[in-house]
Image (cartoon, rainbow, N blue to C red; front, top):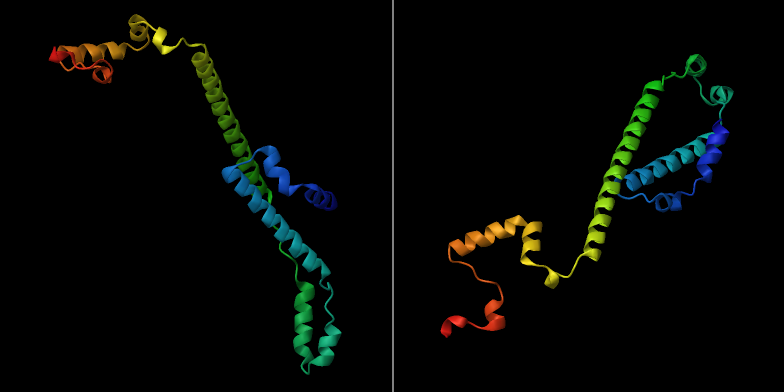
Length: 175
């Protein structure tokens, strides 16, 4: 299985993976970080696999005067058993993180799809709308009742002035 995993990791096109999947932001950074950790681990495994696996205690006995120290080290080395770790907890945490990431991606996709539909609806509304010059006052008031309320308020206070009216038609108060 390890050989299969190694060959699968080597077959991934890391340079184009982010662009093919359309990854951006923190997801692209996490992918780059994972690739770096993967490369570092692969390099360490290669270096360690090239190192000699067997210790020549006879060589050390002949080189050193105190062979009792070498005997003690050899005894401790042969008695050494690497500690075994249960990685199921970490694997469960990774699976939970992956599930949360998938759920978050699906929620984001849903929001983006809803916003896209809303924008398409708005675009269609803009494209099919009549020009502003062809609208009647009643149609504008029906679409935006707050405009009618604001106009009524300004007229009642005597502050009603149409922006740009004096520039276009002149000031009639002089007549």
